[in-house]
Structure formats: structure tokens, C-alpha cells
Image 1 (tube, rainbow, N blue to C red):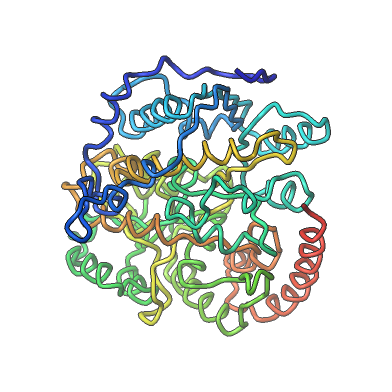
Image 2: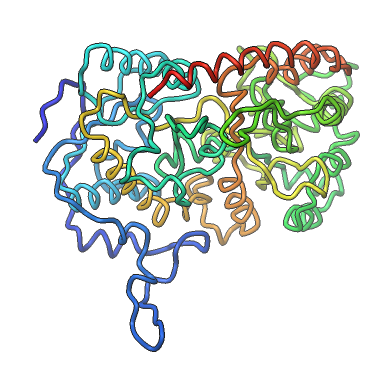
Amino acid sequence: MKNKRFLSLALAVLMALSLLLTVASCGEADNGPTDTGKGTQNGTTDESATESPYQQLEKENYDRDCVIMTRDDCVDDFVVDGMKGDVLGDSLYERNTVVAEDYGVDFVFSYQGNSYNVVNEAVKQQVSGGLDDYDVFIGHKHSYAGLALNNYLVDMNKITTMDLSGAWWDQGCYNNLTVNGKTYVMTGDILPDSSMRISSCMVFNKDMMAELNKSVDDLNATARAGGFTLDVLMTYAKDVTFDLNGDSKLNYQDDRYCLTGWKMAAPYAMYYGAGGMFVTIVDGVPELNYTDEQVTGIYEKLHSLIVGENAYYVTQEHLYDTMFDVFTEGRALFSTMTLRLISQYLTEMEDAYGILPEPKYDTYQKEYLSFVNGSTSLVMIAKTESDPEFVGAIMEAMATYNYEHVTPNMFQVVTKLQAAQDPISAEMVDLIIRNRVFDLGYFADLSVTNLVRDQLETGRAEIASQLKSGRQSAGRALTLLLKNIDKCD
């Protein structure tokens, strides 16, 4: 096996492959490959036509370690030590076991704290020292500006063992973070916990809906038909915020709110959910593609909802958890959050809740869109990696296996419920995780992407003057970004 220096945790003893494949094939949902029988073509059996993406991969016995470095809060995508009856953990244990057996690898995991800097510094040390200690790094938003733009990473488009066009790789990430044909960070099904679940969504209190004589069935039907818009959300939220204790002032400890949200999440989630964007890639080149009218139109609707209807909009870090408390205690009709936060905060909630995508701007918007915030994980390979083709093969195997056996169970992973208990929310979760938004402007830290957040915090309804100055600084930053990318391998 390949020797490497690391802080590590070795994977538990492998389970019998034949048993695992039997278990793993159970319970697949409609959004993954479901036809496991043999196909026919011209009256003859054609096994390749119905083979799963994982089965179609060319397997090679590498007889070596695969060392993965991540943060403590991202280990659930990789580090599992046995079957324990947990949907996500058991599926990933099976994944590790099958891939390790099929490719002749031992997985070794290193996780060194929760600081965002720890992974970036490890990459820099590996490259500056000409080392090859870690095969895969699990980065984050700040890895893009800190590493990708400074020539520390491998361009994954050059790795022939990876098919970045595959459905198991997030195409929103690929299309919007690939510049001049160079892809240094990626995500997708390979990271079900620390990326797929970092997808923005909305939740609503079904019991409160009934108390307020609002129809859950009508809301669900509207959402399923593609009609859940900011205007629809406003009609449900209007006049819901109320001074329950009669002290003539709103207090998060006692009163009722139409919506709860955190300033570092809600403005971005709702802006991007409404089809807003600041930077897109055109023929490989990033461009500022927004109009002042577009941003202003979205902002005015968000201002009317959050400021005009007195939503509980948390702007102080020490009050962060209170946005969830208000919702789980049954005193908020809606809340903005991510799928991961649902499983963290809502699983013990007494009132029934439903899951919705972020609202569209209007019914002309084609799809529901889910913002992916800066805490999402991203896979990366340091440029001193001695065998990128090996690393690519293992990541491709992990991603395709998850695509078939893990992601179809995402609703159960999020809520710890069977999909049959809330089939509409399960359907919404499927939509949420497959239409995700990655704005290069946000991931490259262009200040213009913070304007909606900053203006909502002030409460001011006007944003036009800030957009004008923001465009100038963003243009300069994009020019610099292109120069940096041109210098990278």
C-alpha cells in the first residue's frame, strides 16, 4: 500500500460484497436508476443498455490507500464504522465497502477541526512542499478564491477517469464554476450530507395553516404545478405576524411571525430562488449578467415580505438559533433554511411541517432553484498529486454509487421519515437537490452579491445606487479573476 503521512481513521473491516449489493439494491426511488433487469435490442439481450452507471465503470485493482482530508463537520460523507440502522450512514458504509473491494483500495480519512482554513492550509503545504500526502481534499467556498485562483489545484477536466457531465456531478456547479474550460472544484452526489443537503428550501407549519384557515392542500397543489412564487408566498404571509402577548411590541420569545430567516442565508436563498444571478459563464468567460431592474424587482418583493410583513429576520449571530425556536415552537408560518438544518432542528418538532422549494419570481420562471451557500463542501485535488487518474476513478466510483443508492433516499435522510408519510414533501426534496444554483460572483466573493443582504438589514427599500457602485467593483474583480485563471495550469 502507498505510504502517506496523515492524521487518520482507517475504515472498518469490509463486509461481504455479495450481501451488500443485495442490501444496497433495495428501496431505490424514482429519481435514480430503477431498471435493474436486462434490456433487449432487436430481440437480443443487451446488458450494457441497462447497466447502472457504477456497474459500467472500468474497475482496476490499485492495491493502495486512498487518503481523504476533510473537516470534522464533513466526516459524515465518508467516515462510517458499521451498519447501525441509519439510512445515510448505512448506505455510505456499503459504498465504502463496495468501492474498496472493487478497486483494491483502503480508505484512510483525516479530519483536523472545523476551521475553514485547515483544509486550505493543508493543500498549500502539500503543494509548496512537493508532497503527496492526501489524494482528495474536501474544500469549501473559500477554497475557490484561496486555492483555485492561485494554481494549487488540478484541473479535473483533464482527468479521463471522471465524467463531469454525468448526472452524479452537480451540473450547476460545473457550468458556473468552470472558467476558461478549467474546473478546480466540484460537488454532487459524492457529498450527500455536506453538499446535497446544503440546498436552500422553505418549510411551513401545517398545523398553523389550519388554525389560520389557510389550505395546505391548495399550497401543495400550487407548488406541484410550478406556481409557488414570491407573490403567492406574500398572500399566505400577509397579516400573519401578530403581537400575541398584547404588549404592543414584537418579541421572538412570545409572538407569532409570518416567516423566520437568518441574514446570512435567507436573502441569498430567496434572491437566487427567484432567478437572480450576478455572474454567469458565457463561452467559458464570466460576465456580469444582471440588470438593475431585475435585482430591484426581486429586492422590492423581498423587502415587502421581510420588512413590510414584519418577518423575524435575525441579524445578530448570538440569536441565530432563535429563528428555529420560533418555528419549532409553532409561532412561525414559514421559515427559510437548508435541508441539512431540517434534520438538525426540526425532527423533534411537535407540529406537522411541509417542505417547499424557494419561491420563483413569477410563473414565467421555468424551474424552482435552490441556492447553495458557502458552507457546502467541494472536492479538490492538489496539483502535486502523483496519480490524478487514480483519484478521479475513485471519486467517480463514489459519486455514481451514491447516485444510485444514497440520493434516492434523501427525503428520508432529511426528515428521518418514510416518504410515504409525506409524498409531496418528498417530491419537493427531489426537485430541490437537482436544481441548485452556484453563482461564481458569490463563490469568488464579489461584494455585489451581498447587496440584497446588506440592504435588507438596513430596512431601506432603495437599492439602485448601491447596484451602480457594486457593478464597478465587481467588474474590476472579474477582470482580476480571469487573469489569475489564465496563469493556472
